[in-house]
Image (cartoon, rainbow, N blue to C red):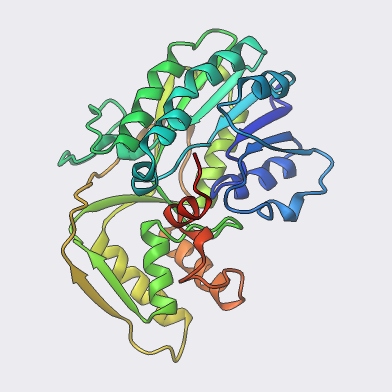
Length: 338
């Protein structure tokens, strides 16, 4: 392991955090999680008694709390945000305060308190609509929504703080898919797989939009790699992290095939297409992480579909059609978060 021993994961009880935190512990890191736990206190139950885990229920906007918990942390992996466009729109003021206003102070306080590496989870949605054949990291940002806009606006705030003793790196993940103990069922691959398994029908909105995806275990692998590589290799860099770019229609057909294979006797799954006003479409290139760091995804989005089918079959995702906690918008409405 590099010199990094203690990692603060903001949003560590979220969809990606719930997979990342156990993997960090497994690798021997000491981990502090800062999260509001709005999707349940149970998310990290599998590791809650681990001697190297500290769970802190709190708000990244709380500067007094940050001053208390940042000392001793060598790295920050910043995942915390109001995630996805519809959730953001529910309460734009709240979303801006968490996703953007809190970011600069968090970065500055991290640096002041001796954090040496800061990994920021931005989003490939910052590209908006692009018909460029392969969208690389230097492509102009054309965010279509406030969520994407603020994701993009945080990037220079972090990169401007970059110095010889503060390694700043930005990751623009594709849409993440697959199983997590904090399951989300409001992401393309996960939605379509849920509907195929539990309704026997997939509804596609639009269909021609191209969306990049990445398996949740692969994005976690990438964050782990970014903790381990020498800082000078990644400092000040921005990385796309995706695996495959497919149209929504193609993803639906893949789901249809996987579910029909994995659920024998489940009958034929029909695909219904309806119009959509969601025009986000972009084909991202993940060549840079391969070229500079040798990182290549090991899992396909079909693997993510299979993992989800298995989780549905053994009852690890109870009440998938009605449970608020799987849907960010419903969970936030339920909480009346302010």
